[in-house]
Image (cartoon, rainbow, N blue to C red; front, side):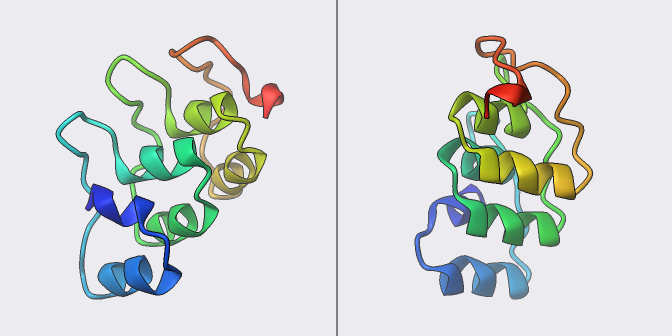
Amino acid sequence: MRFVSVWIRPFSYRLALSRGARPAPGPDGATAAWVAASRGHVGPLEALLAHGADALTPQPGGPTPCGAAADGGHADCVELLLDHGVDCTRPSKLNGVSVSTA
């Protein structure tokens, strides 16, 4: 289901999620929410969160989805994660960038 977070057309990933596709980590351990947050894809991230995507697990050896969004300067994704109750106070393991950067 990781592929859903990188689709460009909102209809595509929303349709897949509505038909029962479930977010799961990719072979590298990155979750769909992590991929969407790290790339600044707000629409897919919102749909993934609405369908129960894991927004807490960091990429192996890397940042949490919130840390990845902050590292990339994607404040809109950080705000969305905060709105969904995600604890964004943990520093990124990637390079120590805090949420205040985004």
